[in-house]
Image (tube, rainbow, N blue to C red; front, top):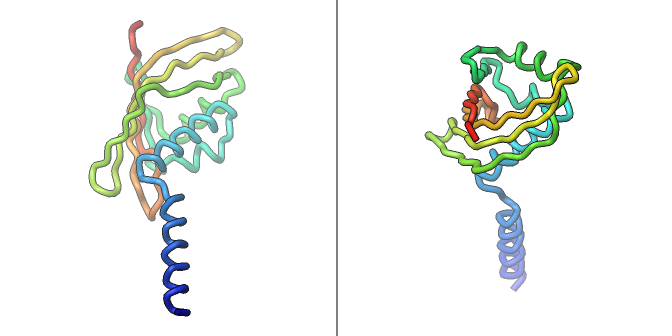
Length: 145
């Protein structure tokens, strides 16, 4: 009887743990959302933590920036990005350690006091190293409205 109660308690505990577990897609969606919010609030440490050391961004003009240049641009006091959301987020896995996160974003803000607005599609390449997902590459493409 005592063993049976213990087994039931263990089964219930395992069930409770699995009820709180998130899928890899949910994990990456939350991580991508947290990164977007860190960018808006200019949290350099949180932004950098999400980036692979070999990170690169390809801009809408085709310019390439590494991790340091990307961080410096985001942290510029001239840049203000308003809170934004992602439309049509799609996450695709290629094996266990590579994922493509894509979607559309309408971004507004200002640069050097001048308002801007942009609407673009993006694709972020995430890689998992040592059990942690990091964004390794970002590319954006403007969307015509």
